[in-house]
Length: 106
Image (cartoon, rainbow, N blue to C red; front, side):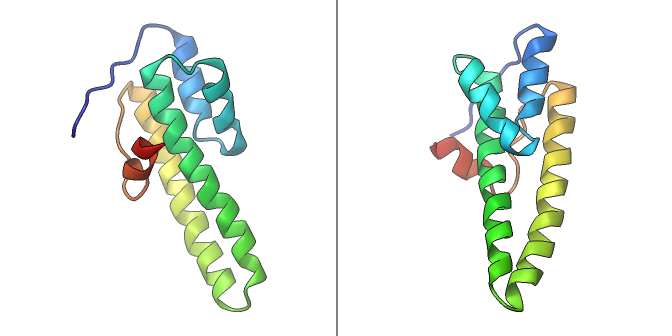
């Protein structure tokens, strides 16, 4: 199921959507602007990304594999955050690989 999400006019929407990819700040767009589909799209992806980051931090408790998982997850989360921020800058709504489908379900 493919839906088109259009960005409404205004710099405020871009700023809120951009906050979605900056760690725990992903919760700000969900609270402040939950009726805007564009901002909600990016906020959902940001929440999944943030949960992955928290899981990666908790994986450091595991000996050996935890550090490897944390390193790989850190790089992937950084890359996805940059891709998300570029998407917001361009005014697009790109589904991020691996997390885009999960984000639609919340």
